[in-house]
Amino acid sequence: MRMWGCVGLALFVFIGLPALTAEAQRTEADVYVGQAIVDFDDKRYDSALDNLRRALEVEPDHVQALYYTGVVYMAQRQPARAVPFLERARARVPSDSVIAFQLGLAYFAEERYDRAEPQLEEAFRAQPDLDGLGYYVGFLRYRKKDYRGALQAFRGGQTKDQDLQQLTRLYTGLSLAAMGLPGQATSEVEQAIRLAPGSAITGPAERLRDAVVTAQATERRFSGEVRVGLLYDDNPRVRPKSVVGNGDPNADPLVTTLRGQSRQSIDSVGELVGLRGDYVWWRTPQWESSISYSGFLTYENDVPSFSVLDHLFAASVVHKNTVAGMPLQAGLQYAYDVVFLGGPTFLQRQTASLFGTLVENDHHLTQVFGRYQRKDFNERQRLSRPEIRDADNWMIGFQHFLRFADDRHYLKLGYQYDWEDADGHDWEYRGSRILAGGQYTLPWRGIRLKYDFDVHFRDYVFPNSVLPSNNPGRVRRSDQEFNHDVRVEVPMGTVRLGSRDTSLTFVLEYLSTNNNSNLDVFSFRRNVTSASVTWSF
Image 1 (cartoon, rainbow, N blue to C red):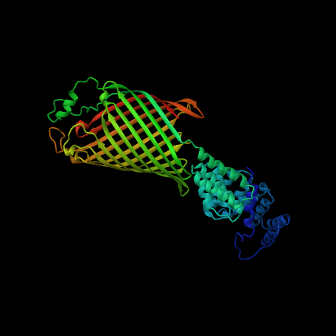
Image 2: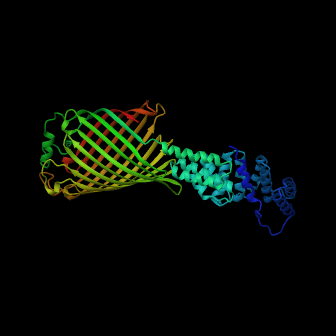
Image 3: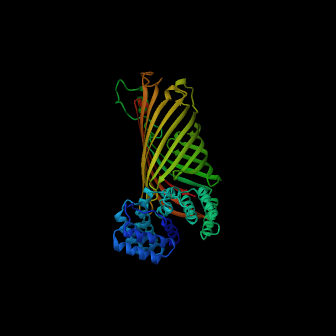
């Protein structure tokens, strides 16, 4: 892309520059440079070059003579001849941001962007308010897809030239559109149009605005997926593992009884079915609201009474904005779900969540969230007050993602703190959860390898009123729950459905839970392996 017009606009900023160096006594070379500046003001470039040549004959390293020689050649659109003089001036005064800017412009005019970038970036760090500098730095960052950095440069720079102002607005809009902020992008482009309605840039700017608005309006509103598969569960009943040896007088009789039951149907083969649908019912450039449903069934063939069916309904609203040039999405969600265990209702939950996602740059993303959840259990038998599990749960946390190759690979690390304020004292706890994981996408067929790990430490507030069964009311429960999730996703291709492409994915997943508790009845291991096909549309 030829940028000569814009470069030419920046050149005239320096016509009236004061001397780059202060000298106590004017020399013969200074006189020639002074006359050259007057010639330059009158656009008598050949005369200016003649005076500058005389100055350099008298004083070959005269900084001003070198600098203005480069400026005159740039005015004549001869950047190749300007570069050697500007480089010599730069070598004499390496800390001067004005010389760095002009040398960067010369490289820019030659489209030698790799050479222009360090000069312009250095000048921007030292003197960001140089007229027009923010645009050139932003343009180079935009070329490298550093949209956040480009936005910072466009907004941090200054220029009095109307054409550069219009270009800055236009590329600010392009950066915002690339960052997924169409509302702000449209606003910037409209301001670019208003700055100079009759300029050559106005036509492309109008087409860009219309394209952003059209893309926003036609963006897919409904999406979903269907999942079917088989599973193997080695402990659907969640029976306690052996912690204390048989015959130990301190063993909890309840655990001994549970472990001593018939070993038939300890494990089970089953089927799983999942369904999810999301509909964006309201969308503006800055706001988006959606409703969703997801259902999930795991049917245990050998122990049907431990089959689980979960229905979840949710509604959310999200606002898109920027903070210090970084894309920010903040939102609120309400969800209601009901869980059935072997037929009857087991649990109902109502959840309200606040969340925010900040995209620092192409490699860093941070999520923060807070949640309130109300749990209501359908107990099948009367319980004493301390044993009632109904509870209010409060949670805050964050996750940070380190992203690579346009999110084909990532690493993540997070922390959550939660407080279970249960109606019954036996279930009230304070918990900390550490989360980690990552994804790696193979170069072959786009196969994704995922691993997620979390450990949940729960310290219960009150001594358990009924456990251990041979010494109740004396022990406060403490658990450490370790969860591993290993997942392989193999894309199977796309299926055309009407006017949209849908995709099929084969998923192989292994889930492992190991809960260690000082109350043996809550210590268990469970491993679930599944193979399924997911259709996303």
